[in-house]
Image (cartoon, rainbow, N blue to C red; front, side):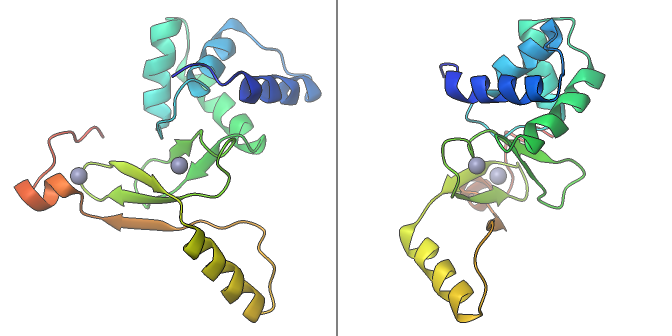
Length: 155
Ligand SMILES: [Zn+2]
Ligand SMILES: [Zn+2]
């Protein structure tokens, strides 16, 4: 996937607004995050960023992730596991939902206008206005259903 230049630019401006330096380690992390559409864990990000720059440390990854979520360009997701997932796709698709396989952590995104409409109707009926929404469905992926376990368990 090509680098999402617009998202990268926004994040760099966000760091500058906080007077934070963009070190070469941070640069490698930013380039990694904004050139994938996969949902990742902190450990995955560390491994991917190290492919670009061997000097990237775990500490820098852990310091950069909260900045990425604070900027609104990446969203932290909790599926009730020991680790969090990070989603780089909110920058371009602010309204989408997730299915996750409880076994292999395969994540699938979906987006449905009917669902969006229903959420608006329910919210309005109850006298609220929507600030943010998230729908997460934990389930059993195709392979798990077929074979009883998933080959690609990665965590
Ligand atoms: Zn997503
Ligand atoms: Zn699975």
